[in-house]
Length: 360
Ligand code: SF4
Image 1 (tube, rainbow, N blue to C red):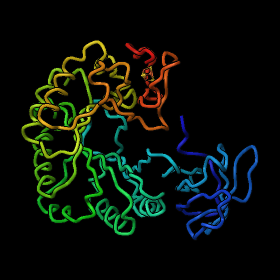
Image 2: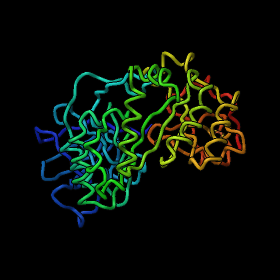
Image 3: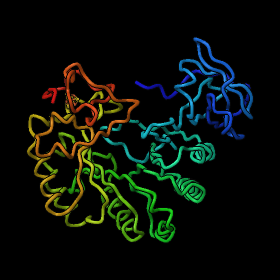
Image 4: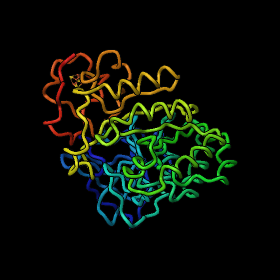
């Protein structure tokens, strides 16, 4: 696993954002910290905020990373890793849903880091997509939209992918979301079932489905780009074909529909036996949903599905979706010729749930 936080000591007393540079002094600005020493324990950088010593990785590993330095906590967060397509900024840990399989169980408190995260975005490498997640980012909708708008005004080469529960878009947002900068934003929104009662039960909030439908109408009217996300659960497996019909009928405007295999973390960890669907043993409901989506022009895809566990006719839909920092392959993958295109497994995926895995 790739470490996203590292122990560090800084001269500064307040949190700050900086870009680490190893041997590229010619491109330095006030936001850069330049390498000034390296030994077996770690590396030292110097910049406008003073000295910064980081343990655990080499200068080459950190070169180009945009990091948030937390002097109080004695650590850095690697917010934007150079060369990685998997950079996600956590804007809050609060949420107003309580999904049965939540991978990042919410907290009651919120630490406002929008100004620091905005600084980080402005230092991003060219042409990348920056993920935004939580918690629920739109609990701080005005701060979120303000950050997106200011960043994209200065950095039109960037794009954002925002994970949101879709509970907070309102009529008055429509004009704002029609701004051309939002062509660079993709909203990833979970939808678990066509039946309101089942969706509400999965997200742990009465009325969530009805409120989501309202938000989707506002997003449609604003011309927003929407990706629907459906985590596969034993609760909604049989309801997947009905959900496909609903999406094909009512939500044809979406950019993509991602059907996602479960992640063994957060609440799903203790509920694994109840929630996990061994899809390689019964792919029929997923296949029926994919067939209907294709027939009606809905661009569906499979996330977190190892390629060899998906029947051949649907394998092209299995994207390499697991972020590099939390991806692993298992011993059964040895010798597989499709590993580079395969999503593999989450680092914390149980070895007992690798049924159907075989090298291709
Ligand atoms: S053997 Fe491993 S790398 Fe190959 S397709 Fe299966 S899960 Fe992916």
